Image 1 (cartoon, rainbow, N blue to C red):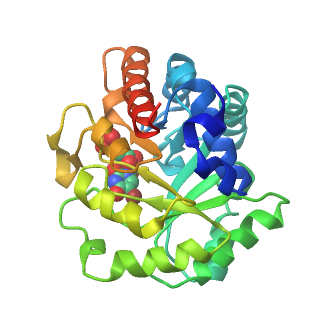
Image 2: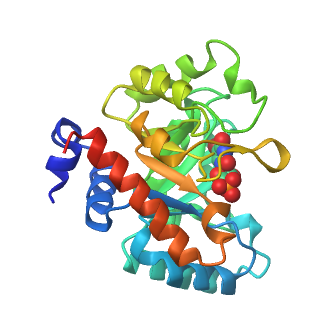
Image 3: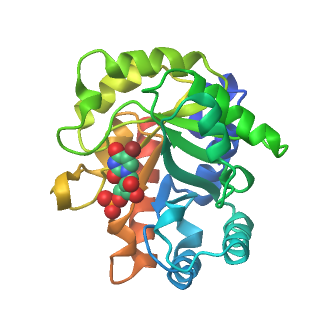
Length: 268
Ligand code: 5BU
């Protein structure tokens, strides 16, 4: 299948190379799964990568969770992920003023050199987007920002009226914005977000699990099929895969559910 068949007008209308790369990978792997690789050692990360690589289209990291992190082992890990056609997405949740966000992409972790995508809150205003674009350009790369328009955790303050709309209005017009984080645990809220975002920018959704309901410390889960039908372009799955007895089987299951929903959504 070709990306243009599956994504339709959204493929033709989108000139963002990262968005097109994502749409292509989803089609070639038949998976909208973004794995939240929340494990704590390099060994666990590498094992997880080996097990799930055919079924996962992007890898979401929290680099500061890893106890035995070293620049070389991380470099090696990122190269292995790239070799199996995964975008690397650091869930950094930037939120400082532009120049500090830019410089925080250097420092010890030097995320500007390996992350293709990164999250940010827009709480400090649009300078965070400009700063992050500068961060990547300092090392001759360009990357994409996923702005938090919604969150999956109970009681989050992004639900205060007007906030989501303000984020979407700014992000939609900014070239550094790859897309938005939407709440995968509430399909009706996600459908509303899709209407506001339109068809160009991506929406990726955490808070999805085949086992729906409330989870640890305020996390909430909705069904991955419903999230895709409501407008998700990438389902972010963590414990549903890495805590499963067989991460490989679980990843395949989430991939199949997401692909089935995308095909249905596309009317194929
Ligand atoms: P889980 O194990 O599937 O619950 O992991 C979810 C991941 O998504 C975890 O890495 C969170 O940091 C991330 N996340 C989230 O759960 N909810 C949000 O609103 C955002 C990120 Br933004």
